[in-house]
Image (cartoon, rainbow, N blue to C red):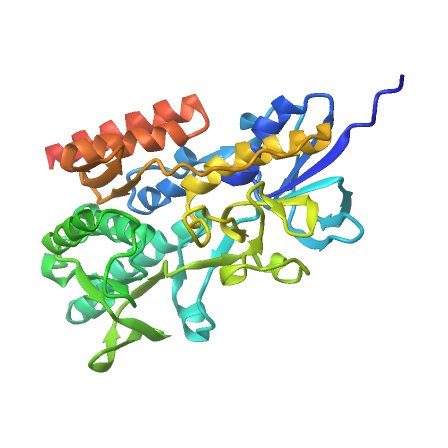
Length: 411
């Protein structure tokens, strides 16, 4: 009896969703499928620690790991930009080549959402990928050099506004505070400490981290203790070169600033917008509880671009915690489809939330407990280390944290 030809499985995206789908599928489908993963980069980026690279706590190589070192040799890795997806023909164009598939996994993630504000897209700095971090650090270092050269403009030049008070915005503004008020100020001793100004702006009247309200109030208190200016209930209506405009209950306010960092939301990757697939909130692709696209059972979607139903109502949030769990679930769905059985239902299990607040600061919510201070810091570090897919990277990151902690104690 002839063995059936291996199924062709194409995975678009090498982030959390694509990586974990490929890892688990390579074990479940050994000999029964040919797995190909396509990504514009040849590395996996651990995005929840990206803000620590921005603040200098970690180096880029701590959070970026070559895909070929994380995936078995049986998984083909193609470094290319996806330029077209033909759902009807089951073809994907990438890097000047065409790839046919029997099953397609859409895990391309998202891009910054500027909500149609052209001035923000032109003048604000996005914070999503590794090159964004390099650009941000270089930009802020240039602002410090300008402030040292023109002390009278130092306050306006150094004012840094982070827009969007979700977990990313909160963690980023705290890490930037530690870097700017520590190493950068020591590098430019002529700049007075009171010239620094960090602003966290949010259109809603509260922080947007999905945590217990008491913990969020504690986060507000800790940010204010660091003299971070919270502009809650302030909508950024326009961004220009060296300024931005807030719109709030009392009207418009134009504020001079040297840096605007945009963390106010994400939307599905642009290539997804052209696909004739059913949509959910925010233009995300509508999927069933098995992660299959409605009307296209051979296509799976997960992560930031998928509107996955939440049993409690609505859709699941666009977080790494959700995507990490969806990857193995997508692999199990693929295994069932290839075996001709019913795919299992994906059940998201919220394991709590952690929010870093810079040096030795964190908030955590897990197992019914609310943690602050050192216990939260230790728990948050443990959570991140558990999610880093490579043991060598876990050790390197842990040692770097210890080094940074010892250096801060000596200051």
